[in-house]
Amino acid sequence: MNKHIYYDDKKISVGSDIEEATQNQVIVKYENGNSETLKVAIKDLLKPGNKNNLFIQTNSVSEVFEELKKHFYYIEAAGGLIQNKDKYLFIKRLGKWDLPKGKLDKGETIKQAAVRECEEECAVTGLSILKQLPNTYHIYEYKIGFAIKVSYWFHMETSSTKELVPQTEENIEEVRWLSIDEVKSVVLKNTYITIEKLVRNFFAL
Image (tube, rainbow, N blue to C red; front, top):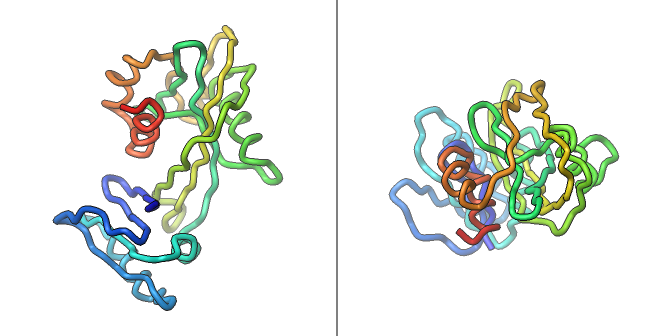
């Protein structure tokens, strides 16, 4: 299965099977450790005004991903899609709907980080993890360069009726329990592409 890393409205796809060709897709074959070719392709992708997607064709996704990490700050985060009966918890951060998540602390497991971050960002309690969801990957400007972040996601549940409180110091403006219909009509119209993909996959939308 191909791995997708998003940068704004562009993406890097990594895998052996070339996806349906698009007008704005650059294909690079990664073989025999040709890291310089990959480096040039990444640099082009990150240029302002470049609208091209990048497909890296390889038989070793893990090898390419390790090579990609050399060109970025690498950050790991964890969070959750939390269910309470027929409602799901979403946050609004910097004007867009999102799911609670945050960076791993030193020595934490990804499950511990996911639960802690959800509790801190929403004041939600009584969380239990049901299953792990697909990871998401995205690139963003960070310090004097760019970071590539992997977010580990979990489907969680709670029966708590405690009032939700947004962690404003993390730029969270609102925390709400939403029905599936509200997720479709509200969240999917104003969210990040990684969250949209995760939500659509989870609810089979």
